[in-house]
Image (cartoon, rainbow, N blue to C red; front, side):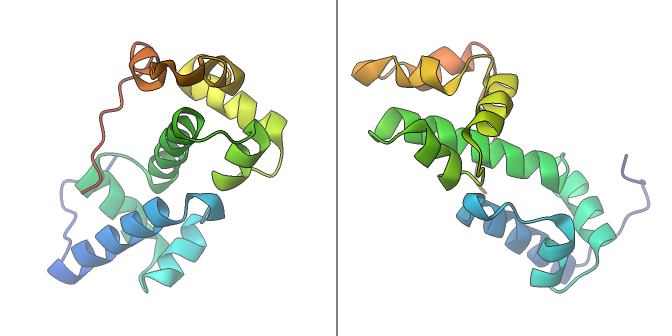
Length: 136
Protein backbone atom coordinates (compact mmCIF):
# COMPACT_ATOMS: atom_id res chain seq x y z
CA UNK A 1 0.00 0.00 0.00
CA UNK A 2 1.27 3.45 -0.91
CA UNK A 3 1.08 6.05 1.83
CA UNK A 4 -1.25 8.95 1.07
CA UNK A 5 1.60 11.33 1.84
CA UNK A 6 3.85 10.16 -1.00
CA UNK A 7 5.29 12.98 -3.05
CA UNK A 8 6.70 12.44 -6.50
CA UNK A 9 8.42 15.37 -8.10
CA UNK A 10 8.21 15.80 -11.87
CA UNK A 11 11.73 14.34 -12.05
CA UNK A 12 10.62 11.31 -9.98
CA UNK A 13 7.68 10.77 -12.33
CA UNK A 14 9.97 10.91 -15.36
CA UNK A 15 12.25 8.33 -13.73
CA UNK A 16 9.32 6.02 -13.01
CA UNK A 17 8.15 6.31 -16.62
CA UNK A 18 11.71 5.65 -17.78
CA UNK A 19 11.79 2.52 -15.59
CA UNK A 20 8.45 1.45 -17.07
CA UNK A 21 9.81 1.86 -20.60
CA UNK A 22 12.90 -0.18 -19.73
CA UNK A 23 10.71 -3.06 -18.57
CA UNK A 24 8.69 -2.82 -21.79
CA UNK A 25 11.68 -2.56 -24.11
CA UNK A 26 13.70 -5.39 -22.57
CA UNK A 27 11.30 -8.12 -21.35
CA UNK A 28 13.99 -10.72 -21.97
CA UNK A 29 16.33 -9.09 -19.42
CA UNK A 30 14.17 -9.66 -16.31
CA UNK A 31 15.47 -6.51 -14.68
CA UNK A 32 15.24 -6.68 -10.88
CA UNK A 33 14.22 -3.75 -8.68
CA UNK A 34 17.77 -3.04 -7.52
CA UNK A 35 19.14 -2.89 -11.05
CA UNK A 36 16.12 -0.98 -12.34
CA UNK A 37 16.52 1.70 -9.68
CA UNK A 38 20.20 2.04 -10.53
CA UNK A 39 19.42 2.33 -14.23
CA UNK A 40 17.11 5.29 -13.64
CA UNK A 41 19.30 6.75 -10.88
CA UNK A 42 16.90 6.68 -7.97
CA UNK A 43 16.37 4.52 -4.90
CA UNK A 44 14.44 1.26 -4.75
CA UNK A 45 11.70 2.60 -2.49
CA UNK A 46 11.01 5.48 -4.86
CA UNK A 47 10.66 3.03 -7.76
CA UNK A 48 8.34 0.74 -5.77
CA UNK A 49 6.21 3.59 -4.44
CA UNK A 50 6.20 5.37 -7.79
CA UNK A 51 4.99 2.31 -9.67
CA UNK A 52 2.25 1.70 -7.13
CA UNK A 53 1.18 5.36 -7.16
CA UNK A 54 1.39 6.00 -10.93
CA UNK A 55 0.61 2.56 -12.37
CA UNK A 56 -1.33 0.87 -9.59
CA UNK A 57 1.01 -2.12 -9.44
CA UNK A 58 4.47 -3.18 -8.37
CA UNK A 59 7.45 -3.18 -10.75
CA UNK A 60 7.59 -6.99 -10.56
CA UNK A 61 3.90 -7.42 -11.39
CA UNK A 62 4.19 -4.91 -14.23
CA UNK A 63 7.22 -6.72 -15.61
CA UNK A 64 5.38 -10.05 -15.51
CA UNK A 65 2.38 -8.52 -17.30
CA UNK A 66 4.66 -7.18 -20.04
CA UNK A 67 6.46 -10.52 -20.43
CA UNK A 68 3.28 -12.61 -20.49
CA UNK A 69 1.60 -10.29 -22.98
CA UNK A 70 4.74 -10.41 -25.13
CA UNK A 71 4.69 -14.20 -24.94
CA UNK A 72 1.10 -14.29 -26.13
CA UNK A 73 1.94 -11.95 -29.00
CA UNK A 74 4.91 -14.08 -30.03
CA UNK A 75 2.81 -17.24 -29.94
CA UNK A 76 0.19 -15.62 -32.17
CA UNK A 77 2.46 -13.76 -34.59
CA UNK A 78 5.54 -15.87 -35.10
CA UNK A 79 6.27 -19.42 -35.99
CA UNK A 80 8.92 -19.96 -33.36
CA UNK A 81 9.27 -22.65 -30.75
CA UNK A 82 7.97 -22.33 -27.22
CA UNK A 83 11.59 -22.44 -26.04
CA UNK A 84 12.37 -19.40 -28.21
CA UNK A 85 9.30 -17.58 -26.87
CA UNK A 86 10.44 -18.41 -23.34
CA UNK A 87 13.91 -17.00 -24.01
CA UNK A 88 12.54 -13.82 -25.61
CA UNK A 89 10.47 -13.29 -22.48
CA UNK A 90 13.32 -13.78 -20.03
CA UNK A 91 13.02 -17.46 -19.16
CA UNK A 92 15.96 -19.82 -19.64
CA UNK A 93 13.91 -22.90 -18.89
CA UNK A 94 10.88 -23.80 -20.99
CA UNK A 95 9.22 -25.62 -18.09
CA UNK A 96 9.43 -22.62 -15.77
CA UNK A 97 8.05 -20.44 -18.55
CA UNK A 98 5.18 -22.85 -19.19
CA UNK A 99 4.27 -22.93 -15.50
CA UNK A 100 4.31 -19.12 -15.24
CA UNK A 101 2.37 -18.77 -18.51
CA UNK A 102 -0.32 -21.22 -17.43
CA UNK A 103 -0.63 -19.55 -14.04
CA UNK A 104 -1.04 -16.16 -15.72
CA UNK A 105 -3.26 -17.05 -18.72
CA UNK A 106 -4.98 -20.23 -17.53
CA UNK A 107 -3.67 -22.48 -20.32
CA UNK A 108 -0.29 -23.69 -21.50
CA UNK A 109 1.69 -21.97 -24.27
CA UNK A 110 1.21 -25.14 -26.34
CA UNK A 111 -2.55 -24.64 -26.17
CA UNK A 112 -2.28 -21.21 -27.78
CA UNK A 113 0.44 -22.26 -30.19
CA UNK A 114 -1.75 -25.19 -31.22
CA UNK A 115 -4.52 -22.82 -32.26
CA UNK A 116 -2.60 -22.28 -35.49
CA UNK A 117 -3.30 -19.21 -37.58
CA UNK A 118 -6.87 -18.85 -36.34
CA UNK A 119 -6.01 -15.53 -34.70
CA UNK A 120 -8.01 -16.30 -31.59
CA UNK A 121 -5.10 -16.10 -29.16
CA UNK A 122 -5.81 -12.83 -27.44
CA UNK A 123 -9.58 -13.12 -27.62
CA UNK A 124 -9.41 -16.60 -26.14
CA UNK A 125 -6.97 -15.51 -23.45
CA UNK A 126 -8.97 -12.41 -22.65
CA UNK A 127 -11.84 -14.58 -21.53
CA UNK A 128 -9.48 -15.80 -18.83
CA UNK A 129 -7.70 -12.53 -18.12
CA UNK A 130 -8.30 -9.15 -19.67
CA UNK A 131 -5.37 -7.38 -21.23
CA UNK A 132 -6.18 -4.11 -19.60
CA UNK A 133 -2.97 -2.21 -19.46
CA UNK A 134 -1.79 0.36 -21.89
CA UNK A 135 1.76 1.21 -22.72
CA UNK A 136 1.76 4.84 -21.73
